[in-house]
Every structure is written in structure tokens, then in C-alpha cells.
Image 1 (cartoon, one colour):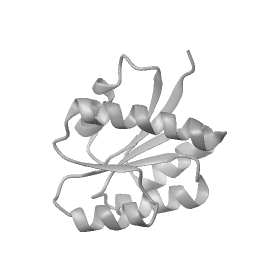
Image 2: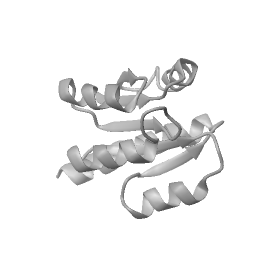
Image 3: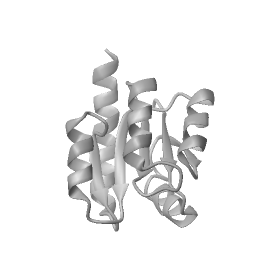
Image 4: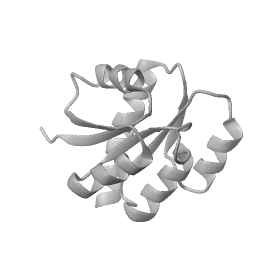
Length: 128
């Protein structure tokens, strides 16, 4: 079975731990970063298939980070997590092609698991 690399970016370690727990039985290698700059560094060392980023981070917003990812690594599928109800910002990011899906915190584990599976399918389609 092919394995896929998922990068989780959040400045709160407990959020990353919770996300990792959701995917522990999946065929994914999980990488983590605490900031946008750390996230971009991970791309230099690992091919990332899916990135899940928090919206509210200290350096730049998750939407801004995912826009950078889109520009530098357009094949990577991008998912945004937001802890506040900025649906407008998420819709703007979707419409600009910066993100594949977004979730509000707290998220539904089944929905986020299915979204990542759909992202992997999308990645494979876009790669052909």
C-alpha cells in the first residue's frame, strides 16, 4: 500500500496531537510544524501530499501560508482549520484556489478523515 505524507501546521501542540490520533491507523506519514516558516522548511525535505493548517498563527495566517504552498507546491492539497467563525475568509481562500476544504474547531473526526482521503484521491487525479 502506498503511503502519503501529511503535514500538520499549528502553533498549539495539543491540536497537532489530536489530529495525529485521528490518522494513526491510516497509511500516512505525519509531519508537524509549529509555524508557517517551519512548515515551508518541511517541504524542502519531504514530498508533502496534503497539508492541514490552522488559520490563526503568529507569523502569517493559515490562508496566507496555504497561498504560499499553492504557489510553490501546487500539487499539494491544502486544508484549513479555523477556530473562529471567519467563514468569509475561508470562502475567499477556497475561491482563490488556496484551499481544498476547511473545518472549524472543534472538528468532526469522521469528516476530517474523509476529507483527507478525498484530498489523496484529488492529489492522485491531479498527478496524472
